[in-house]
Image (cartoon, rainbow, N blue to C red):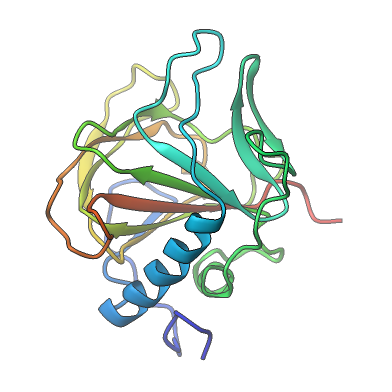
Length: 219
């Protein structure tokens, strides 16, 4: 048994999302595993404080806070988005990805190489949200993006391959795992809103989203 993640003999079957390559596993993590992981994350985020990114070019603050685990962290810079081995706020290397999240990747990613980045998005106010975007800064686009929701439920939106394409939304609750890969790897997606107060898991309220990504192609 990996700390924070219950032993899984076989990966549960996902529910239908309507998008080929997007798999939703409701309640993949049970309450005990969620609480254990949140405690581990809370301790880590006290040592390495999350920061509020600024939009490229405009410098407008985001409505969320961010942090990274792993060899490479995803960051927003004045000239665009990039991966960096160090935290732009303090210059230190990012903390290691928690073992429970590495085990989660092994269960659902169906990819031969481990993740190099775990992006932490903290939706910590009722106005926190994430506009439609697509994860396209990685070399290893054959690897999926694996997302774990903790805390408050959110309204998650998935669109097409252009920002203005038709989209639909569904809810992601605490413990849900979403895998975005295959033919849907470059679909636009985002968070319309967080249903604040729908969970008591996260201290102080809000939602934690953990996004595991493989950045480089395996040697």
